[in-house]
Image (cartoon, rainbow, N blue to C red; front, side):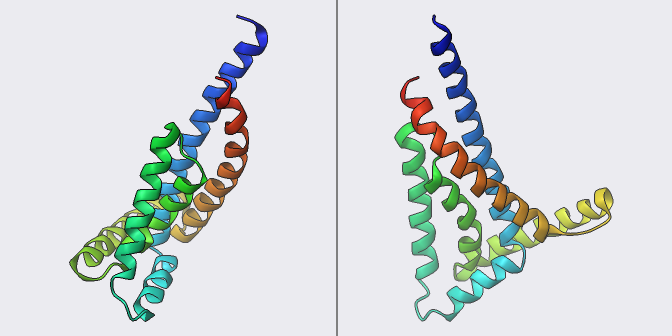
Length: 155
């Protein structure tokens, strides 16, 4: 195996690892955002709409987008990353028992995250965690996805 093929193969594995890591960071950021005032804002926006079916419809579209994006090449691309960031807040905004249950989960999760952050850092900034994870995921997605098209095509 030539040196170039070996380097391309290693780069391809690195890009795949970073892409999946990006999706994980995006899910942490989206979940943290849903349990903060950011999720409350999204919930209020859906509350202003006259159609209660909008949140479940958008949630279904985001879920289908994520699944299709992952099934195409088994690699999370920008669509999956952005959808995973938005899904928890949209799920919390869904009307009825589903939205109430999801909202309760996020509130409990944020209570746990805040108490853990207080123990470890002396501050309870779940908002900072959410923003940091979302910004990191978006930046990683922009950088990784640009490289993934060339790196995985030749692998």
